[in-house]
Amino acid sequence: MNKRKIASIIGKIILIEAVLMIPSLIVALIYGDGDASAFLWTIIPALIIGLLLSHIKQSEKRMSSRDGYFIVAAAWIIISLIGAVPLYLAGGFESYIGALFEIVSGFTTTGASVLTEPADLGHGIIFWRSFTHWIGGMGVLVFVLMVMPMENDNSMHLVRAEVPGPTAGKLVPRMRTTSMILYGIYAAMTVILVVLLLMGKMPLFDSFCIAFGTAGTGGFGVNAAGIGGYGSAYLEIVIGIFMLLFGINFNLYHLLLLGKVREVFKSEEAKVYLGVVTLATVAITLNILGQTQSFAKALREAFFQVASIITTTGFSTVDYNFWPEFSKHTLVLLMVLGACAGSTGGGMKISRVIILVKSLFAEIKQIITPRAIVTVRLDGKTVNKQTLNSTRIYAAAYLILVCVFTLVLSLDGLDLTTNITAVLACFNNIGPGLGLVGPAANFSVYSDWAQLWLSLAMLTGRLEIFPMFLLFARSAHE
Image (cartoon, rainbow, N blue to C red; front, side, top):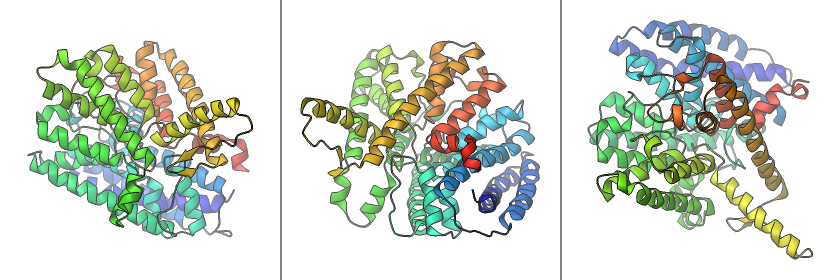
């Protein structure tokens, strides 16, 4: 393990986090809520620590794939530990653990909260809380690669460990250029969304915070009323559409910019993704029709919640705890399914589910015709054995971890529905679950140790399991 290289990169990440807190500091100064000092007492020590670590001399500049996974897992933990400090110092949380849960939820774009009323926080803290969604949505290490040059082999190790999905494709040969393209598209879409929200008469501050949450498919609201509190069908539709857009693989947007429209329409994952959204929206609309005033309202509520859950954003306009059982079960299935690979969304990922389903049918076909050569294809291309194996291993690890997290969480004494949906909501980076952690409630019902356990679930889910395993594996430190 190249420990000096790892320390240097983590130092750079800490430096970048300190710089990224400056906009929140400015917001705090503008509104004068008294939380500016909390940012100063965090930024200054972070800058000092970051500078010291980043200037460590390195005898060997190259690093292995194992080092890349270790850096990604360690970096996400460290930025969470530092990012929680201003929340705690500002006095909006009863304990540092609560503040840590909140900021882990922010960076992992989960959107789960322990707050009853976010509006009680200062504007700077609310802004930072939402801004972490935007930072974490595309990936912290992807941002680092964009602003700081790095050997291309080293950068690829980091991207493989952080970018969600079964594969980490390169748009162009150099990873730094790839990162700039991704963030350019990401930023442009965010700006367009802010403008559209302003056109819907959403306040400027709210527009930025909600846009950060939508772009990162996070889900933190500015107040307890959430998106439904604005009482605007226009805003619900705009946010719903953009949640779906940010749940699509960003490689497809790059192809669109290059004019390769045919390749975009060949994407099997995008077709299944949009097909599931359509089917789930229609099914839930018909199921909740008797509880709403009109078909149009039922359709709007169903569309928004389907878009919010499948993209793992977690915004809500209604308390779906009171929906019929079929609709609630459908939402739970969407929690597991998730968005597309290479998007800001979480969950199992559509491409993995496609591969798993096709693997199942391929295995059945192989049993029926043993001598036949059976392959699994995605977008017309044969999926290699390495991808097939990693997908199957991920699915097995996913199932085991959800069971383990739920079992341990049960020690806190809450009911099964609350516990299992809390784990699914955190592991899949969604936000609200059902029962006591439904859209109208929060995670303050859990004790500090349970919140720590759920924070680990959020990080493990966001980094797709393996980086967290390698971080704690003894062999990874040799």
